Image (cartoon, rainbow, N blue to C red; front, top):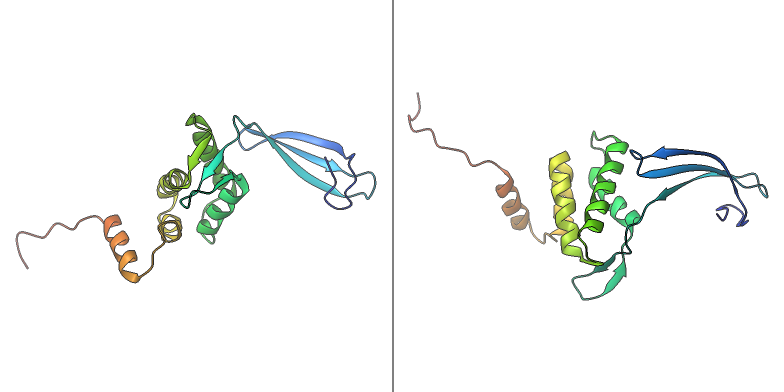
Length: 159
């Protein structure tokens, strides 16, 4: 592993331990050239995923990009960072288990929205506003109306 500080190519592993509920290995590394210490994570990757964008472009799936967008939606919410890591890992596993090497960005967005809706409604709405590309307040109002439970009018009238 190349040192991120000096670029030396021969770093040493000082400690390894399971991380993210045993789906990754966390390694503490040391660079003998500059003395720098850093952490790496090793994960199993079942298949190389390619994202098919709505404009027809293809790009390699990027776990960090997915994690970054979820963390932005979750910013300042009372959710533990470990819970976010577990959610990201679960989403990636689900994408890999679809059996396809090409996945549309729409599929990814739907899966992320389902996961966010189970964890935090505010993060769900934040993500949806970007994912669904709300252009006006009316778009947001329609979306929020779908989230609110329908109120049943009181048949007895005012008391």
